[in-house]
Image (tube, rainbow, N blue to C red; front, side):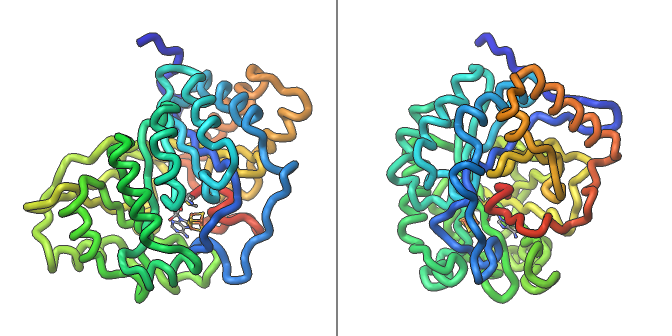
Length: 335
Ligand code: SAM
Ligand code: SF4
């Protein structure tokens, strides 16, 4: 297959950056307690959100800079009208470009087939509890049955390896047993993700991945397995299986084990800022640049400059610690 995709951006002293996460909306049909504060977040106006054409232009520039993998996220990406067509716009940029999606799954049963047909490679589905009442308590408004229907639809549509993201919260959903049972039944890769306390007081729900793993080892005999394809920093890929399982289990521990020095990510927030780190306070306002007339060539210069800076700042350490800018939330940055 001919492909113009360059294999990653590499600057002296930094890791190869080849992965772009695009938050296409800050809106969501859920209100997860660890993602949004109880009093909600103010939504961006239509004008403040990047159009799909602007995002495509930016992605073209990023691909010429070395990005080979793009994840569409949000907020909830499937609540934005035209999300499937946007996936098609992205997969049309270059046959070598791989595009995936992170979703809460509630709208997946409706869109999984169309997404596959639009060229989507695979999906990650966030489901934090398999108990309907607990799921409702965590998401404040969601129904577990809809998320599970979405998960099954993704598997049936061939959007695998399907990963299930579980953000573990102490005292809320810190029993991993039901997810072990899920991997007995379905060929999914469950990932227990450490909660990053970015708006609640530090430590409130935090539980180390190692503790979840120990709890799991009380009920199943974990064996090291081969990690399914993943696009994040290589150091985050852990994979275990156990006798009788159809799927696998992994742990992502950004708090216990910083992976800044191998971070291969570039992000674009829903309001059009390019961020080289989740905790960038400002980023570069590429939406403004595009609306002022920047073409793909100029955007590539901006991207390259920022990635050079990311490498120069050494190990990509967050410039501003582990606090996002006031008013920023995962739903705006895309996780
Ligand atoms: N709505 C989609 C979903 O939930 O999958 C996509 C956006 S969501 C912001 C992307 C990922 O970020 C989800 O897996 C979510 O669980 C995770 N996330 C959100 N807040 C988090 C936090 N405080 N700590 C760790 N992960 C978080
Ligand atoms: Fe919405 Fe995803 Fe945040 Fe939950 S984690 S509120 S589904 S954006």
